[in-house]
Length: 177
Length: 84
Image (cartoon, rainbow over the protein chains, first blue to last red):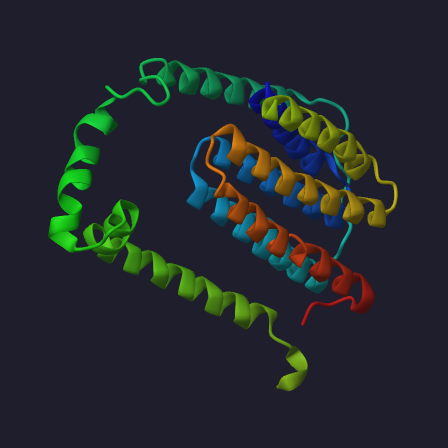
């Protein structure tokens, strides 16, 4: 029941954020979306993802979007096509077919939390049994992130660092020059 | 018991969402976002008890701490027209 309500909430938020004419309001609705998404992650027991979603999605992204908005215009411009054209119908058809194919693809997937799922049979026991001996890290997730996938994490950090530098370059004040 | 409470909280948040979408003024939306954030904190605490993992309460506390960042950024933008 509560999951259904939360997902309904998300859908309403997403549609409202798309339909909103005022971009500042759309940003606020997106912040709400991120907060509720964080609750959904917590419901799925993915607490770390929920944390990232709340801090990055609801906190930093909202701030960055407002910062971008302060450098541009607030309202939406251009004449939006109100009548349903043949092109948008074709786009709707493509979206529906793609969605149907994706849902068909999930039919073969194991049930949520199934202990006999391949992901729980092969990789996970290996990490649970050996990660402490091999890496000396107490926490499995930390061991995978920082040791087994250390170079991967290093690459991700580099990407985020570069993105941060780009944001600083874009948003810095012109008057200092 | 906790399930019912969580459901009621989500229903209340949906009522607030109506105001967030309808507006009409931008301050209504700011207030709605803030109220929904507060409801999220309560919801997280309740989910912690549903899962019988009360240490989710710490997560709810951290949520409460980062909840106001967007509001402050927004109000600064409204006041000065810029963020830096």
